[in-house]
Image (cartoon, rainbow over all chains, first blue to last red; front, side, top):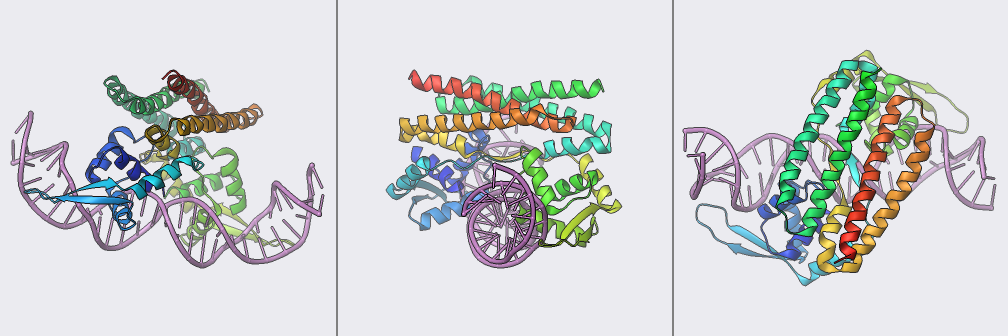
Length: 169
Length: 169
DNA sequence: ATGGGCATGTAAATCGTTACATGATTCT
DNA sequence: AGAATCATGTAACGATTTACATGCCCAT
């Protein structure tokens, strides 16, 4: 349901294409959502039907016609309403934690590998985030990057603890 | 896809009913997944067909017949295989962060309310988790509670920072 | 020349939530 | 008396993923 508002929110800042939206999601909002083309385009079409957005088609040579969407006043009203509604709880699925919980009964070495892999991934994410965070003006973007940084740093500390406990057992 | 393995993993420890599985999820695995009856029962039926689990029906008075599921060797093999496969990335949706990103353009007071609400919820969660964590033997359960505790504590610190920045702007 | 970025989309499959339906028992 | 717990499930809807399909432009 909230992909509607993701789109509406981004278009409230400036008109853009579906491609631009996806880019923005990947670059700054991936901590919040992971919407892919498969949801984005159909949702844009629906919003258009409902008159929450409008579109300008811009012909280009050698590329598909670019469709620049912008929000309507109706769409703005919907966005504002959503912002006031109670926020729905985080929806999260961490297969990693499930495996952590089950791995031990099966094999100690699987458990260690699992933790090591998680550590590597988290480290890589931290690197990316850190370089992203350095050159940022928009405070909102900073908050989000900061949120992710804090998450993964805390997770690294937790990984240390768990790995120690396993090693000393 | 991973609800299969959630079920298989729990049944590998001991036979239980669909109801028991849901309880276990709520009580100790909610940081990892949120599977509800609507997925759990149909998935159990499918696993039964595929011979990954078996069932013993136990008649009870005044209640539906209790169906106690247990894992088969075939199911165990599947579980072990999953544990070795690369772990799929966390799947997350945080409407809260989306709203944070958009609220400012619309209204400063919405932004403050949003943060205050999040703080209250996080505090409440921390309380619950802390009391849960005190009386725990199983180290796996401790790790998971600990993971959640670390997440929410770090989030509280982040909330402090963001609220300060907003207040001083 | 090869890979990445630009730019649109669709189809099939599956995943998952929510609400509904039922009803006895036990705790407060 | 009323709420929570035990215990099963379905139906309708909505959300989401993944892979497919197309093809130029630009930088290395």
